[in-house]
Length: 210
Ligand code: PRT
Ligand code: ZN
Image (cartoon, rainbow, N blue to C red):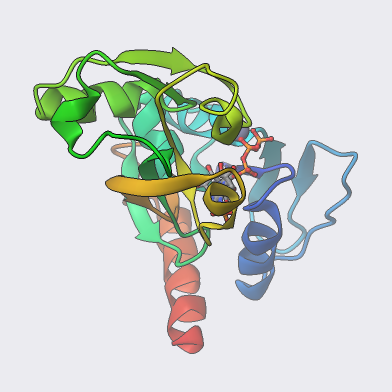
């Protein structure tokens, strides 16, 4: 049977928990930081270590059969993949936030205002759903400093503890989407016996944690 490939984050917030999950599934592999691909010795599977942004497209295009990535990245890349299992880690919310002294009070007040974000696709759809047109300023990181620098009136960024917002003089103002890490697969391959076996193992690990 064809060896499967699963794409996980190379380094970052989801890497450690993704590796731990796969090891708890009984998969044996080396986790060298330097290697981008690692064979599993006791299952027909290879692990690809990638930037999280690339994972949804790799799965959609069939370069990887499976992937572990945040739902926020899947929505932002607008890929068509199968959601196989929510994984219960990497939990966060994509939120709008404004400076503590802002006079913005409702979502409609964002009309004509500028919003800095790394999630322009999700934000644009959200605003359109509220009939709001804002000037979306796409920046790749450190979004929380944008209002203080005079770059935007508001931001839209991921929040977990909320500490980063507070330390930058911002307050949450509205939820755009909730996100956690999910196992995704290529559409139409859900019945592959190896994929069924892996999902089964993942679900057993998750049940044991409950
Ligand atoms: O290098 P690569 O591209 O793979 O990684 P990355 O830098 O794009 O992503 P990374 O590792 O930061 O995050 C990976 C995934 O973790 C995200 O796509 C989310 O699905 C999930 N996640 C969960 C988070 C957070 N929580 C989170 N708090 N991703 C980012 N943050 C950031 C947020 O952007 C903000 O700057 O943490 C800061 C806020 O944290 P708090 O705790 O102060 O609220
Ligand atoms: Zn990324």
